[in-house]
Image 1 (cartoon, rainbow, N blue to C red):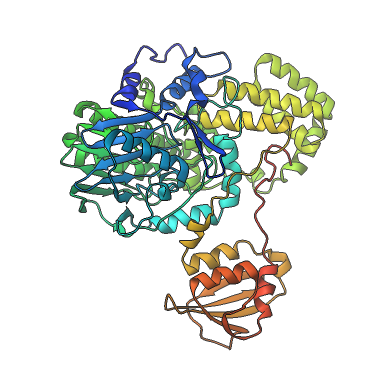
Image 2: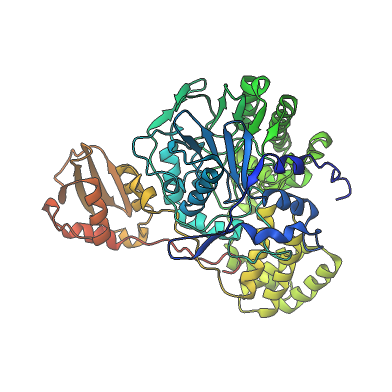
Length: 600
């Protein structure tokens, strides 16, 4: 860490700038009196970095844990440190525009109250979602009921917001337990943040559907008397995302496209792989469109950057970071290196390395390079030895047998631990645990390796994965994360998305020999669908042509949720075999929200 510019204190000045005050009660609670966020949980970071943490990540935690209301510029205020993300308040003629109302309702409500404490009882006159990730819309009902105000979002927002949290929501939520480690003890030996924010709040998630779509770069809207010029950036940090500029305040919002870290190209909780080339392109475009016109740049995470020259440099360096990783990964891939090999070889230019905001506190060079490789070439590295490998447990049993049995592997691994080769210890002892999960000695040795790897990690989410894994090896699997597919998100699904979300729950083998056809007509939507079950596949089309269906149902969208919840057609108009609904629902399999990760 000796080469890191710890003498550069500009970020500490910026994170304090404009501070107005913070919550009188640092603990935000839900309606049951249960804590969902604690602003003071990270007060320990004020001390010197211990040997159980990476000094660079410790420094990032000191910056990100700063909480309260801050003035960005005249008329623009941010509440930071009240959730994983920031919420921004832009004052208009009649009230205040809310940008990205946090992840859950309770912290969002507390943030709005804090803003009003310092700026007066201004009504919320609009909400803007910068993009389709839950920590930027989930708290919306904490600031408004959405009646008679515009809800602004990039085109495609709703589709991506709901699909990410529903289709693969079970697996993502389980892995998010590791990524954000909200249940891990805060402290020098435990959770010290996630790099992008400290962790996720544990409150109530909500969603109000957008009423105004932003469809193209250059689109200008006047909202509550405030002029806003938008830049659409699809395929960057989210499939639907946008930056925007306030010309009358010379302020630029970069959403989550430019923060004080190297971001994820493939988040460890799982997501669609992001496009580093497109991301870099839109950063350059933002600099060209707004860099010369901006006096302050703020984002939906971290702290603002002031002064035109600093803003242009910041955007230029962020552009160069993603572009370099993209181009060099492909250069090395075209020389025959695999993703893992490229990740080991990749180094960013020294001029970027010495800038704090390029460091991998949330994303990392290692897993971003692998993501770029995956985007272009997929999971297979071309080596036929990797084409049809045994699954983890069977592979582990064979490895352990080849290596002379568990006792020999553990003895050799302890020597590797003494030598400081923690990566190798994790690799080989993981085989013993998967071959025999009841081996207590192996579990503790693997947990010890994870402790060391986590405490040395500069990346917050890597630390959380390692330490959560160690915790579970020594105890029980953590409680499941809150269900991301809450009523608002499920209610926002289109009929097609609802049917798709059911289809991914069908137990294929159990459904192999079942057949059924249902015609659905929705009177409130003027939409019709045919659903068919065959060969273990539940699929749908908007055409109802062909042979008569086994069942015809005429209903509204709210009634569909009742039918799916009860399996009955009570009070719903229908003709044909009503038992078909129960047959289809009996074939569905609920996601396991607590599946093991570090054990088989």
